[in-house]
Length: 250
Image (cartoon, rainbow, N blue to C red; front, side, top):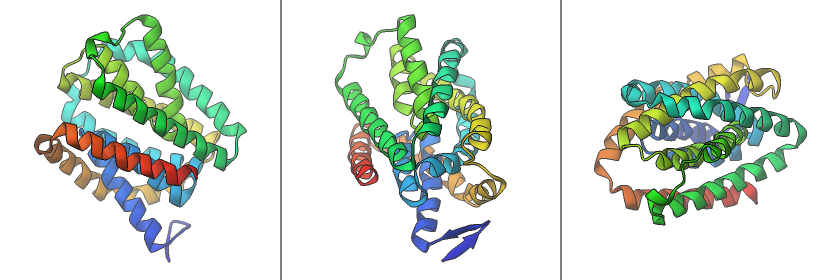
């Protein structure tokens, strides 16, 4: 047992925490599926809602690496189109999170993961030119992104679907997503502190201990995304994530 900033951690939960930082760092520099693995791993050790608050400062730290590397490639017109609807989604997620217990919270996280996997699999098969780009499509996905990022830090698939509908090149895709998550993650902080009470000084101090792992993950993400077959890697991530979600829900 290890005691850190009022947290009593087993060696397994401490290892899981460090691994989560590594995966988040990789996710923010291009290996996006890693973030979906990190969510159920942390939830298994710390609970659904508490893990959501514990992960948020880690994501913000990792956002800095992602934005630093891809900041010049953002398409701001798409961000301005999404932000108002994403804010609605965050407010909806905050309200629902206050009305349910942790087991229901974990179940909702698991369902979101499975839906996200379904979207990822569909995106592997669909003709990208058939994805609509109407205003109502931005509204639906903006609300979905806000809700899923508040409840489980799981907005990646909704954002991927929207950005693909905009036919953005690779760097613009990653850069626009990086800025979106940087802004929306900071917006979520007050709700975690004063509504859900899942972020405290102790949780922030604990998160800071994992900063070196986030930095290593960010570096590895840049290297991995250049060398590994994107197609095979995405399928591997989907399978591992599905297994992790099953254990979290059941």
